[in-house]
Length: 412
Image (spheres, rainbow, N blue to C red):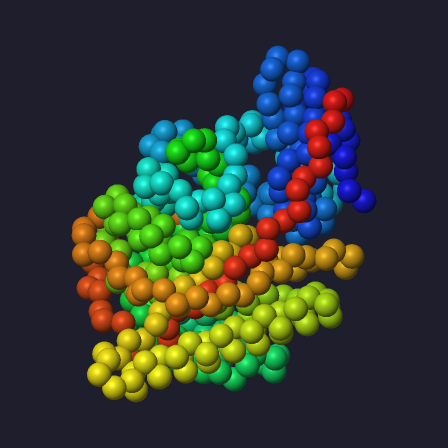
């Protein structure tokens, strides 16, 4: 049963001794996993309450709590944004409710961000670079996942094998993904700290500034492309190029030339992961939706390939192979509970100019999200290679449906 902001305010008083709420309002969150509220106390301070709806969501909050403690004050002070601070927690049966100090700013939709000015694009890029340049000891000391480039690529191959056993993936997509994963040059990157669940709902914006980054449940060492999938999914070429340009300048390490291509592939492969989770959860409706989206994706790719073939065969014209960009992945899809209807992403494929990482030297994200080369290359500078000319490894686009508006605020 869903908890009201009033009930969450009462729980918060048990988590934070001395807290006296005077007002409460519903707050944006993953409705399938959490009940959430914003509180105002008697001293005018604001607080955020997150109460999990099932054990898996509670485990995610506990993981984030452990990860946040790994960020020493000195490390936090170096970041260009704020991170959540846990003020208190209370356990009710198998579930733990957390109360956080309120962070300024608000979330914006991917459509709003993708049409933002260059100043905000630079802020997003700087935040990404700062995460990716974090010392890897933060992850290692917290005993969080760490993957070399080759290990990450093998992990994706294993996930592809698992998806293939469902018998519900269109053969054209299986071939496409297999070819991409066999393209060793595509997966040659320097592993770094990645956020792993980065998307527009985990960025708090105030004006043209990124004030805070939230959702630290997937921190790990892996592929920086994981944190770019939602950007490539915006389908706004100018926005993506602007972020990449500023990111390249801010990084201490030199990003590889295949970063955005892997990001788009990871966004595309998320549909297969969604299907596997839907089947594991036993949700026939979610499974049918996943199958429909995969079929639509395969049809869109086939159409783009046909257009490319026509353009290549046109007399007197230079053959041009259209690139495809991924549209927004708003959040990582989790398997829903027995009575939960989970929101599902829609699929869109749009021809856009090809994206090539600028040749500039630069700066870099509690468990994490979307790729790799043949062997460990951590700490080594990689040389960008020319993208593969194979059709089946081109990039493609996904788009996520916006959630319903939240309930109005209530006075306590």
